[in-house]
Image 1: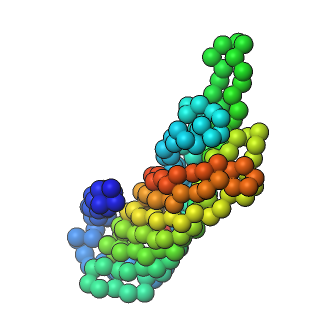
Image 2: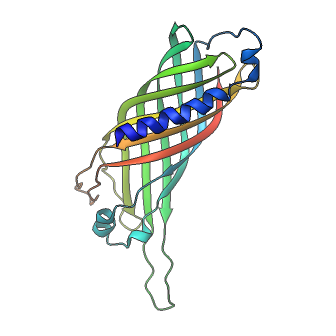
Image 3: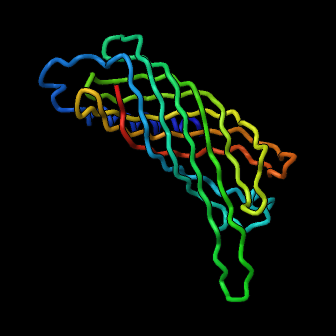
Length: 218
């Protein structure tokens, strides 16, 4: 499964390389700069785990499969080998989602709202291809995240951190000397979580996809 996702990442990175500014082939370009930072709006796609819905005493259709939030990070590029720049840095994200199933009849009871929380911090390394005004990259890291579900009428206060691997690809296109448009497609493999004393239910190992876009600075 990991091999399949790695292939998807590489296939995503290749067309991003082709989208670099056309001037790259017309004249020599300066290499990738020494530093860049991003702030992006993000969308995450989650799996529905029937065991989690059962432990929450809700139907699977009441579990939110999408969350929205912010992600960002910064990278420093200390080494270059030919046309590849190597970067080190880190990222963060925070996202929320919720869902409430409406009653199917006037006499049916109201289902409780179910909320999803996802936050993550991770160091990363990256391989960058392109030039100062536009480049694509593949990157990955190992960090910690909080990913859990709760009912609105029974909030969880002690969700533990979970080991998390992230890997993906993206690109930055600078529209002027300091500001860029950036996009990132990333997968997060999150370790399982046991039940918590405050009533948090067990969460199985899962993998989710995050798509984000925003602005970059240098």
